[in-house]
Structures are given as structure tokens and as C-alpha cells.
Length: 215
Image 1 (cartoon, rainbow, N blue to C red):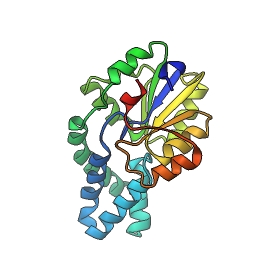
Image 2 (cartoon, one colour):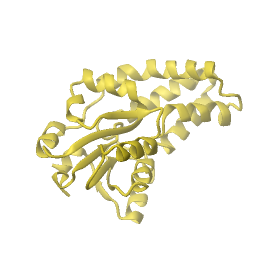
Image 3 (cartoon, rainbow, N blue to C red):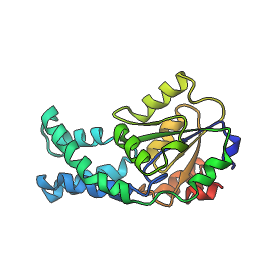
């Protein structure tokens, strides 16, 4: 598999570009902890089994399904702000995937995009501050839009065209990309998807450990 064979390459962020899965898991736990350890552990379990889905959906689930209360705008804003505070410093300090500049140099004719479950404004700021925004000439996109919404919009606008590969580390990444007929490679090195081996084997998915393995 050579990235240079693809006209468009779409990247998830957490667990693919940044070693940030554990950062976000910890942030979910700390944000939910004021509601009790049991509730916090339930949110973490939901988060890790639904990788790639936005924090908005996860906190709605936390309030409605776990706490059995209404997901009012005020409480949602409070949770999202607390989560953002917890996660911001971790995203500035976590590892960036090795080989990223070399991969970009090896695909001069390909368009690169980020399609993530992370907050779009947060992603763009972090990528800019960490000096990797320039690699993604096709744009950096995230929640509150879902991955399906982002992919559909970018395809309709012609930003995603030709032979396209999606690089992800979750079941949701594969499901979302498959809905639009995109190629897919699963990265296992930083994933929190339990059972990924069986899932990938059953579907014959290409698996690599790190982005640098695609060099």
C-alpha cells in the first residue's frame, strides 16, 4: 500500500496523528467525576467503545442514559467547558506520529484532510500551534458535525475526489468511511478499540501499527 497511489488521504486525529486517546479518556473521567465514580467509569466505558464519536454526543448520553436527566444547554455547556480545560494541555504535550513530514513529502500530488470527532476549533488551534496544520491542505474538520456529515459535504464540494484512503483507529472510522466507498487502513498502535484484531480480520482490513509504517 502506497499513499502516493491515492489522490485524497483522510486522517482521523486521535490515535492516528496524535497519541491523544488516553488524554481524552482521562479528561472524560475527570469531567464526570463530580457526579460520582460509578458514573465516571460508565462514561469512560461508553467513550472507549464509541471511539471517534463527538464529545457532544457522549455527554448527551452521559446525562440522558447514565444520569437519567435532561441534557439542558446549561449543563452541556458546563460539561463541555470542563472537558475542554482538561484536554487542552494534554493535546499540546502528547506525541505526534513519527514520519508525518516524510509521508507528506512522499505524496506531493495528494490532498490531505483531517476528519475527526474532536472539536473543530480546538483541532485547528492545536495543529497550528504544533506546526502540523500546513500538511493538511484539504482542511481540518471536526465536531459538532459528525464524520458522515463532514465526508458527505467534502465529497459534494469536490474536496474529496478520486481514489481516497481513510486512515483511522476505530470501528466508527471504518463504518463512516465505508459508507462513502473509501479505502481504509486501521492503525493499531494507539487504538483503544478492544477487539480490533477480530473486527479487522473478519473484514479483511489492512492493518498497520503506526503512520510511519506507510512510508
